[in-house]
Amino acid sequence: LAKTTQPISMDSYEGQEVNITCSHNNIATNDYITWYQQFPSQGPRFIIQGYKTKVTNEVASLFIPADRKSSTLSLPRVSLSDTAVYYCLVGDGSNDYKLSFGAGTTVTVRA
Amino acid sequence: DTEVTQTPKHLVMGMTNKKSLKCEQHMGHRAMYWYKQKAKKPPELMFVYSYEKLSINESVPSRFSPECPNSSLLNLHLHALQPEDSALYLCASSQGPRDDEQFFGPGTRLTVL
Image (tube, rainbow over all chains, first blue to last red; front, side):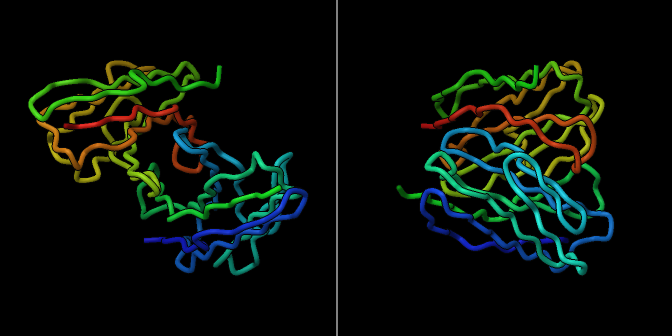
């Protein structure tokens, strides 16, 4: 089963770039890598998804090396409102509907 | 409408009570999910319905009983719960399989006394 490993926490300051790296050594060939953001007492929210190389949207970039054993979520110029838990997910087993959340990274942005 | 709604927002119940959690989406999604989240832990998958049929049951105790009356509604019936079942219960939906974006509701905060 694919499993993800992320840092437990990261601190940053407003305006800085935050990079969170996730390890997924056993990722399956057909699995995508997906990141979600969660604020306290709210449901997680989709941020970005990729399969290989680089994906960018209006809120983040996702960098995936050729071996796909890790990925890095990049949050440019963070603000206080980016303080949240960030989860890296890959598929879990052969079931098409099963996703497993990793432990998550708590990002704290300070003024 | 990209919203998943959950009711109630908060629920307090005794161990002998029977209650139900409700989830609704109107995005035409064919997959709906129940997750359980304890404090400072990631969400844990409980059940998945695909095209209104139970697709995944993650060995959840029978005191939790899911139901999918139609493609827009998902219920979680609760009976004889234990205090350790207190958690945030999240509902989600997606258009298709796991690689499709899951839209989460705000959750129901359940306390079992």
